[in-house]
Length: 364
Image (cartoon, rainbow, N blue to C red; front, top):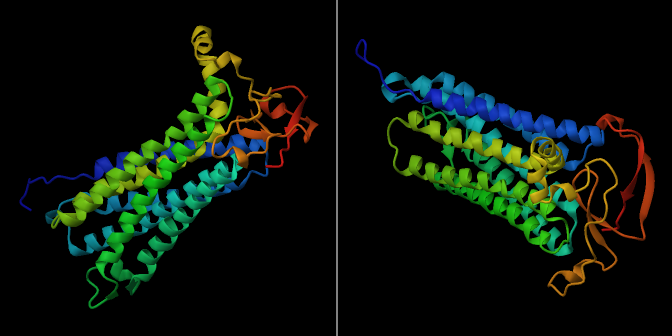
């Protein structure tokens, strides 16, 4: 490069996306865990999956950020073969952990959805989603990452002579399958709860609150689609300056898993957001959207529903003696009149006085 000549460097954009995504993801993840811990220190399966997702994403983001500081985003004329190999190594490890983080976050969503327990058909949808995640976010990517090349270093270091690798079409196909499965599961998460809410007689405000939470999954869908397109562009169109163009793919990968984790954290935080909105919005606005008719977050809720007696295709899967209510922490749960037990609960952690609440122990 001639003295004084300046070539483009896209690493700055990647760093901003990486750091911003990491901060937001960590904030929502820790907020969710703190709220859940204050409700029940033992947490639940969805919380443990979120912990794994956060750990994997933090590691993945760290490696991706290291690749940006090592030369990713620069043109070929600015770097040598050693820098290229190091960048490919860092992006490879970071991309692997980012993929696993998405899988853990989606398993957290599945664990939370299973707790809704609306019907057997609904649970089959969730179980199908779990199978898709295990195959497309873990099994196939792990084979692509760690089994498809011998030695494994050949996956990122082109300097290795005569490696024993599977056809490149395998990795390409796995990448497309993984991206496509993310779109499918996001649509399932967004659609399934909304469809079932049509059968439940909750307040209009509560229904829209739940709908908006799950519709947030569509932001992740948009990023997944963009990543699939960018991967195809990188594979088919880019022949030179590959580490310059991979910044976009890396940024989309980081954004995808961050959004997935944030979306996975939102359902347990819906009641928290609800309480914040009631403190911020004017009373007239709250009254117009029906917010004043919803119960406070930490006391005994009234039954907002009536028994489901419709002749819909799934009505036979829901016992007729069960009602649906919004639980004390914003969850939609099943209530059986035959199995309601009142217990004492200390609510001091929420800044409330000691009081009674009814623990809903439906058999579904």
